[in-house]
Image 1 (cartoon, rainbow, N blue to C red):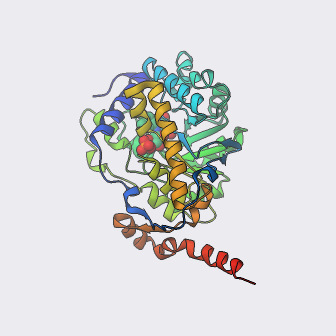
Image 2 (image 1 turned 30 degrees about the horizontal axis):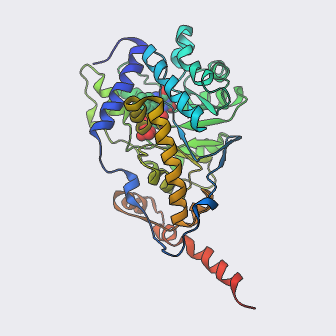
Image 3 (image 1 turned 90 degrees about the horizontal axis):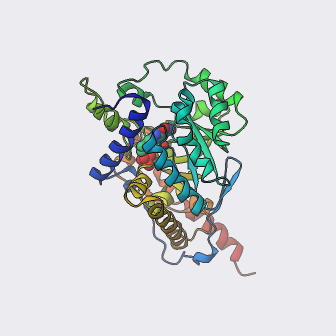
Length: 367
Ligand SMILES: Cc1cc2nc3c(=O)[nH]c(=O)nc-3n(C[C@H](O)[C@H](O)[C@H](O)COP(=O)(O)O)c2cc1C
């Protein structure tokens, strides 16, 4: 049952996300993606550079701690641990929605801790699309944020006991936010995916970055449903597209793609990068680490993921995240059905390395 007020809601989200994370060890869209293994294609791990440039900042690794929390005493402590882990590893971090801090300034320190503990790191602010342009400016200022994530969450609002039912003004509101802030704007879902049509529209609106945040990990239908008294929306669980489906379906041109939603391992990160994501966001899995083992536990995990990412790039013969886009991918299962229904040619994804290999062979032809 729901706790009272915004602070109670934030505590509920963390508690329920963590509980549901423990219950779920199910299949995800990422399990439908296999790399073709080329046994002679490997390179040396020390040749791999994991750095990427995202929204005007240089990152040492292509993954980040995605938006989660803030707004209550408990989640302020959690943000402090997340910020320390981000600082110690140089991993970028996004705040949870700053709405609670904008509406009640006494809650703002529970967000501001992300910047106070990590003064030189990459920190993104986060806000719902329905908020005003002025709120967006205040959110960015409050964290001295390097970018602003704006979330689209109509499904969550629908199941949320105190949620909105008014979504028609969102494009207008997004355009106003885009014009008001001086940092890059990243539009994201919260676990239901961004379709090809949505990504095209975001491109038309001049949005430079989009995090598809698909289904298969944290599920806000289940979380909000557990907070309801009656009026059960449990039947909506599983709504939307997975990150893998969103990446396969993304139009060209589209905003620069970020991916999140159900990322459990470094292999899922590599899969998302190979499918065209420039960087990969992780919430639920890192929340589990920090709740179980604090900032130190998350630092250990972030370092382990970095080492594993480098190792996986070496096996795949990719000296950078960009080079993963020339790997051969087999798409199976429900994701393949989605692709067939959407008219996506999966054979092209399965033979991507051949064009590159042919070019190399031509160049190496003896004179
Ligand atoms: C406890 C919790 C709170 C979240 N709060 C926000 C939020 O305030 N704003 C937002 O854009 N996304 C929020 N998210 C969604 C995540 O950023 C992400 O889009 C989603 O959880 C899917 O990623 P995952 O499967 O790795 O958890 C939250 C996620 C969790 C687990």
